[in-house]
Amino acid sequence: MQIVILTALGVGGATVFGAVLGFLFKQFSHKFSDIVLSFAAGVMLCAAVLGLVVPSLEYGGVHGLPVTVLGIFCGALCLNFIDKLVPHLHRLSGADQETHPGGAEKLNKVLLFVMAIAIHNLPEGIAAGVGFGTGNNAEAITIAAGIALQNIPEGMVIIGPMLAAGMRPGRTFVAAMLTGVVEVLGTILGYFAVSLSTAVLPFALAFAGGTMLYVISDEMIPETHAHGSERGATYALLVGFCLMLAMSHYLG
Image (cartoon, rainbow, N blue to C red):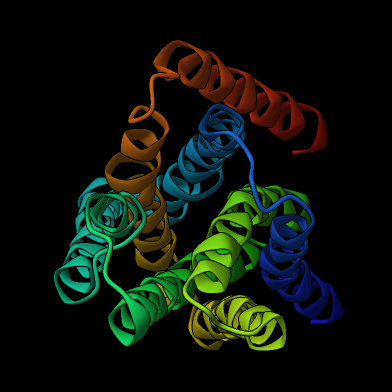
């Protein structure tokens, strides 16, 4: 349990670390952000497939494939439903660039963006916690590391808009930190969900994998290909994928 708590703090703390970087470097290029985010997407893609989807098939036994496929689609549909309520990353950030509201309206848009990130962080945290249900702590930690990597640029992204909207630095940091706290709670929740019943493990693993695959395809890749850095982002994704593959091979 201790390693789960430490991992949860690490996953949530990555958002806080990103927020600190956001304060230090208020202006960073889209190219840099796209490369880092795409690298994280590659890590998450490999972690989702090797750490969640494949173990779901293995633990599912005879009915492994239908349960895994069902879990993947349920995870994707869950985030799809959340997207209907609170659009995330490229939708909100793109809308923010096209309109220039003033005062309270601008602040409300930014706070909606932060709330969207917090809500999306819950299933990502659950995915990190569910990984520990297999008993392979090394694999679970690498999955959490992939999610944490994605949280760093996400933490960086939310600082600038909040400061530009007139929010005080102290409140800005607290708001960013709360998005990380949600992920800590999600990690612990995911761990306890599979610990209480191993029968749900194959479905839970696939569900977590589905949420990660959805985030990569619907959020991260479009965001990293929207500012003219498509080629660099593609290779960064491949580097992240191969790095995660090597870690899984040597640590698994």
